[in-house]
Length: 519
Image (cartoon, rainbow, N blue to C red):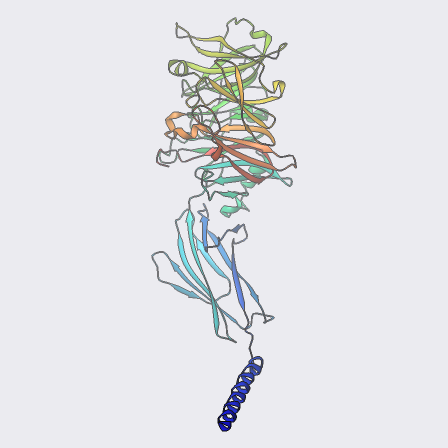
């Protein structure tokens, strides 16, 4: 028995010693650290703007009107090595429809031909020759036509005026190009000089009559001239102005787009005389230019497409011109209207009526009484003799904001018997039937300008007539473009509000779209 106990104790001691030996050796292993390599890739147009590569490795380049080269540069970090002598690079580049090509340079340059759809699949690898460990990154690159369904924003930031673009603003993945020219590789283009001096954006979806597939034209107006471009190329051509403007070096002070009447655009010189464009290339004088007139308020109409209506400060009368082709001539409506001389015309625009009232209308004028500050609406339409006449039909009282009301807007096919106005940071809707004003949106910053995307039901995109853009100056001096959508009743769709930030002082903006119902 004693012998068995001794054997058991010996075995226990041996076992305990073995375990302790294994535990003590655990800290004696020789662990070898390896050089960890991390890599990201930056992309930029050669000599131009950067191009975003998202977290998934996808990158969308904009098709440019010129050939461009995009440079892809790896940004390497290592945990041990002090230089990159131990690294070997390889790009496996597969262009759509072609065989893969291997490139061993650190930096990859890819060519993108002008106005051409191009796509690449790329696998980039960097190998540490000391450890023979490789790190991989995949890229998917494609090009797309730029600036379709986009807000164009003329704004000045840090003393430099630029043309910014918000592409697909309704999308969750909308893209802001703060420098629309630079993102097309056009940073050195002479057209940049036009951007620097521009004062107005003038857009028409149907003005280019020589191009049935893509009839839209975007014009940029400065005091000294007007240039036309296609929104998806931004290559500019100077438009021909009337000889009286060029000979007398008259400054251009106002411009109105053709997204309402669609058939024309109009500019105004410093004398208050107007010039219209019907062919997308040339501006013509609206007669009579020998008898001075002075346009105070200018507005396109929606009823008889291709006409404009004005209030004239010299004649103290409403006037109209038919610019549907041929030679436009200004005619005045000389008619006594009770109370008209006691009011100040502050805005003119499309009729908010419906049916025959709109079709026979030149538009409406909103006026403010000089003494009471009450607002009144005048309707310009045809009477029973088919002649144009002025009717005072709607007295709306004092609008919220009073003298601080800065702009009005109507979207007649979307909102009947209603108009919209801004005062300070707020957007209001006025129901003309009862004169009631209702606040529908607070931008939390001063609203300087608002525009509906589309005002013509013939475009084939009816819901966009309820989309409204606003230029907003925040308290800290930064600027934003707000986009909202209104219901058929003119109320705010709460989930539709989008705010696009990062702009300088916004001078003008407009919405551009490819004019087909399918887009």
